[in-house]
Length: 406
View (cartoon, rainbow, N blue to C red):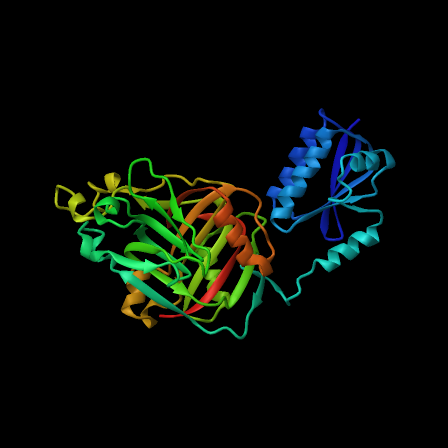
């Protein structure tokens, strides 16, 4: 008879499996492990002291868990494996891959060795559980803007408004951008865009859009990004943090407030990597160039023109997907230049563009934030890039904060 019991011990989750793990019971075990990983668990201990038999179907469940957790610097340990099961592990050449442990003390030792090498501060802020590290020696980053957003509403852009921004000129950026050499070829392909570590992702404003992108290995290539308008920033992270609200979710407004409580700077460049609990994003359906100007002469955001020009959500989507977003958070707009006020938007405290990537476990180790950002943006499928609305909700994630000069 098969059963699996989940409990907490030594600060991690244990799964005690009794009986046979075969084709009949493996799906149940798979569902339980998937549930734990989806809920944010990154270290699991499989107690197999009462497991009498395991077939290849069961071994496959553990191998899949091992692969999922390894991607996000997680681990699954196997505790007190019975001799019949150990022989099956050996026969399948898994003893050299899996970590087999005989004692609880050894589990405790392994967990202790996984503690961060850099001092991390843990705190609870407005119901949000956070861990963060501060880098004392960093200097302020710098904000730059490209073009002007003034012609969006009236759809009046032309070739002379296009600004070329090279991939090495801003680590992170957001705006209305595309790729290409000839204006006549790319003029109708501008769309919501973001640059992450020099890699451009954009969502062309066409029927049935698909994200296009250009990955630029740092220091090895230099690619021209074409902007109608946007902003970018570079610099070192002053803070890197992880966050989680186990009881419900963290919306973008609460996150922006959280960032301003961690940093005392007035203007922040934000790089967000999080698991969606309901993504709200909007994007243009047409490129706002002069040839596409509404025939009625009205602005594109009027009630008459809005449905044809803007994809605006009526409900949240992409639950469980990974979202990468870059943008700005400002504490006091009046203290910043007119350039910053225009970029963020009148009366607003943040402006971010986000890409929706595939569903997959997300790492939680803030020391490996950049590596996880690279993994997600260069290895996972991406489905859309949109202006992120304040209602967007996240269960957990990480963020890098760059303090900026306006």
